[in-house]
Length: 430
View 1: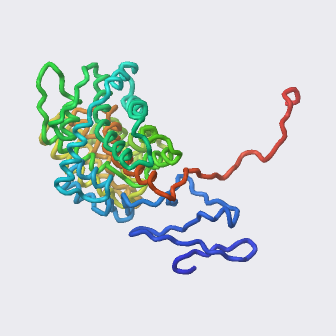
View 2: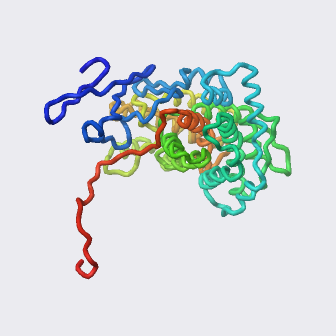
View 3: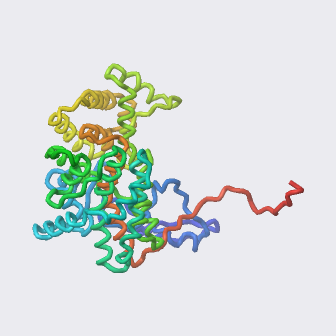
């Protein structure tokens, strides 16, 4: 094996080289683009766990070391010093903005939060108890019917307009879905409020009385959105890229990503954590449920521990845990016993040999659901909140994918295990 290629030996004894491509950091990749043409075989990788599906300069993850970086900046630094709007600019445009660029970008997002009145009327067609994620996906998909004049993917200005609209309008759509569920009147956005303040206002304000925004609640949402902003080629992001690779309009691609996020193994994980804690119920029951989690024949699973990518610890978990403390102390909610239960469960699991051997550390979902619950956000909205944070990552990846001159429509292959060729049998002979 040479330094920059892998040698593949054919059945006839001859060898060929597969080039190795090197990124800035992280594992090298073997370029297998010509594998089928030259050797007549495909690779087989269910779930794409060892496949690099694209080239990207947006986000880097080192699962072994617990590293997450946006455009080269460690997420810990961004969480401590930045804001979600600044991180959004970074993800979309590649660099941290100057003060002037940030002010202009922030102003742009604030001024595009309103929805077309026709889109608001769309909500009247849903049942009062429709799931917010169903509404979010449908209404985002409908945006192509309202903004079809600026959907030329080859036009950079149109790509920017799309990204700004998604980022600005998704909180308004999410809040409208919540208001439909509660039977309350829709609350229009306010340009004088920042991104997270505006979301809280649209969620919880009512016409009958003034609503005072708690700065800690806004700070908590801002942090959560930063931590959820992007996570490399995850299921929903890959879905956005795959849908967008066909040339489908970007709103359809984002709607597809929202649908993928809805799955309990992806964006629904924080809701599952809360349901698990409620099932455990009391600190005295933790030992019993930990043993149940170890039993492969028991359907119970400890949700919020371990991660598909992080094999050590989730760097977002430590950050969000501290914010969880801050929120509960500030808001003095009755959900504190639930947090105490989560804290004790974390300590028990981290000291247990079974979890230590398997590196089952708490991930970001372990505490995020508790924060949302403490802020008064219902469990049906948890995945919606995840989508709000991830929307800028989706937009950044779509922009990167669609502007790649070497881009191709996504078309995976398969290992076929069905019947071999067989002749049709007339119905009277079957």
